[in-house]
Length: 210
Image (cartoon, helix red, strand yellow):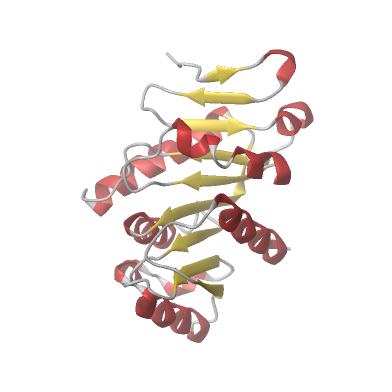
């Protein structure tokens, strides 16, 4: 049985929180159009919840994307167990909502940035690309380079991020391997970017999907 987090009247938007605490936000324009649209799968270090998706709903409304989250994926948990739950969440999104399966991206910060990269590398058939903030390079062991052709990788870090050196390293590897990517360095410590930073990353993805 599905638990509705918010379903407003007159098709304003749809916000569903299911029994796994996974969240799915579908903007009004998407509901009205009945077209399949790009989507962003959001990960959080402590397990994504409705409040996290609330903070970036404006992005979905602005670019007409679906945003959804996997609650079980989190830091200090086996990466492959996280990956299984992420793929379960992904399949639910495609089965229940108008997601364009050719244009799904995954976002994560720090440990979940590593997870986002690993899940892209393990399942390039499911994801078009990734937004990874302040992650280290552990996920590279899963990269199957021929299968990553045409994928998009947005890396960001900070001037005082303890993982900064790994982002420079990953950026160089992706360029050598001719994977379309960018690296954005902002001032500050090892902290998540603002919703506006995520919006900027999505705009880069949109531009480079063409």
